[in-house]
Image (tube, rainbow over all chains, first blue to last red; front, top):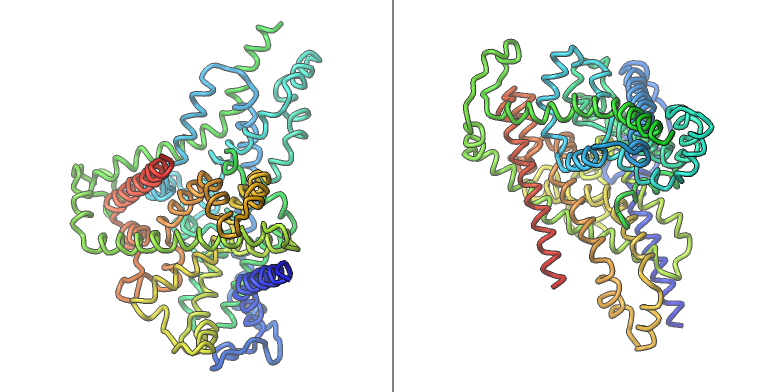
Length: 273
Length: 297
């Protein structure tokens, strides 16, 4: 009897929590499908009376958000591909290649983790301006290309690669890059995938840096375009919700497809870290 | 042969590090160093065109920031956000972790994913969603509270309620991340401890207070530190929901830095604000570590 009551309250709490967590996202989708004006009624409606895709059409035609969707995709994909290779090589070298100064450099990099991004933003803006990279997608990508966190993540994983495996390849006469490419990469692939998922979501969702570095609306990423749009169209609730769905849906899809991989990444450096 | 390998390894090692070290050097170390210099100058919009115009002003920016009531207001708002929103986030995530990790809970994987979903969403997009949810006439939140007999509150239009409203959004957005870390830590608590406690007749509450929480203490410190660090940097929520208003009640330190740097182009001053924030965050982290050590004794 007591156990049954425990089970009931436990699951009631879980279900209530889950519903509260999902409610804002569910309303976002529902409101994006409502005819114009229907989300601004009292009492508020939960469901569209006649679902319509008109607001999505408007985003892609009159408001040209396809451009921002493309920009976001380009920024997130390019940095992810580049940073997987750059941080993968560095993380492996820190873990497995023996050379003088290695550990001291690694310690210095870890110390950099305490510096918040805001400290870098203003001087980096001036530096990129001098390089002609302000208001270009390259400018938005620059901070995401190499990451101390990514190097750390790969290093911790690569420590478990057996030395015998590498030495065997060396005895066979393989060069170090060849060993990395054909022996190490297949072994550390899981952590690279985790980091890729992590980096993709971070770059996609990033707001403050692209807001600073991109000034031309044709170059905006989706979060910047959306923040800009809400300034002009704050009354068009349904339109704004369609824009929010467009921005959130790709990352949600990536997360749901790679949830195990992603959750492993979220735990790196916490438990037993 | 072995000596040969060692030379090759050293060359390969530096070659493998080179791209990452060059990028981090050029786009992180160099700007941090330049920023420190920048914060001691009166670098402004004229200096952007001709950097020679900027003059060394010593600690002038720091002194000016610390004299500015706007800065103290922003700092007060940020500390309010951190001091109330931080513990709320940890409490919510602890509750969720205990529920999901309960031995008798079903569909654990599903609930874990659901609670984690807000973490991966785009902050700007969900801030806009919540802006509408908080609407005093058309918003679902006031409607739901009305069912409980609570009069409508103009959440984002009332200086007393705007910051708490942003805190609730932040708790919703972030609790899933800390929950995940706490669940992993809960799974490392030895089962024998609970069995022994059950033999001694300890109830659920006693087990939580005497076994679970002490075992979680190092993890709670870790999630406390990362939560506080993240919350000190709050920017996007006030930027898209309130623009720092009403009556500057949601102006945060980073929003203030952004306005000084990129709206008024006081780049030297804004960099000084960034370094002051950095110092405050370091101090907050050290205080948390000290408190933890005190509690262990």
